[in-house]
Image (cartoon, rainbow, N blue to C red; front, side, top):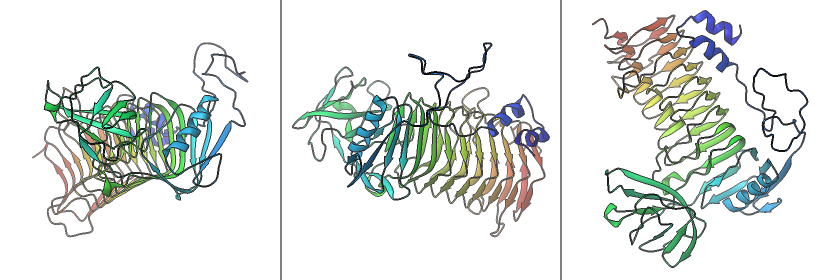
Length: 456
């Protein structure tokens, strides 16, 4: 049965099926492929390369390829620099492929990805990692219009390093986070690649840390990353929040595809992408990261998370705020310390199906009570054909629907507890929840299979 027919057989509200079926049929975008828009004009066939037209391109058989290796290749070295140099060279010629040969490459800064490139590793033995982090206090005030800082001591910082500047905002008490690169120095005085745009005053206890994502991009599109390992050197690095970093961190990007990428041991998130659309994470392995395994960030539309292993993170999959029309399918989500999947603030019209979620520290699937507005709950989502096993401690819950969550369908799932039943619950529905459809689920081993607080 096709995805569309399967979903139509489920039956739901408000056009969810029509959108969901479209999601389920999405395939990974081919790099450098012709981008077609539906419109009232004639169909576009056999396009030519036309100056200024970056929407309709021929599908070229070949673009530039450069190789990077520790001891061989077009560019050689064991740091971020030869990889960035190869990327910049290929980008100057309109895009292409950078092949990173097996070896260990230790970064002092992020590798920044432009549009239209493919980053191809040589398998798990292509390892991108980072130096141990160091944190130094600032020795002098820098104003929001400045482009320099002075540290108490230069320590191990070098020109070219990626850094994170943190300070307490003097006006509201929040912590400001600024990501920059050191581009010049005189002793302990460093120039930054861009203005600060925040006040780094000594009264706010500002610091400079050698923290950065391994791979990052902002306001770019059509990038493919395949067949490599990202190791965050977690035991030697302080934490970087997933809204600012991760082994992979994207901001305001479109059409990124990750295949056979391992993201491990980052003191933060494995994969984090914020306000990014049509991101595909497929056949990847995100594990042993301090925070989130895969983090479809605020406002991200149509993420596809398929056939991944997501293990031993703080949370497996974290649907952030306003993530819509996404698909999490066929993933193995095991041993995450808090939740296997967490979904909440206005995360609507998503499908989670055919996943195996086991040994979650607290809850298998959590529908958060994100009561920040009139209707910010994770409504109109489908949970189908999953196996959810051994969730939480003695009072653990396999699926917990909190707050005013409504229009959720939980269908054909195997929800199991193979340990002693204790106080464990299969499905808990909050007293304020709306319509929740439960059908053909098989629950075994719980002290209470379903706790529906709406009727108690």
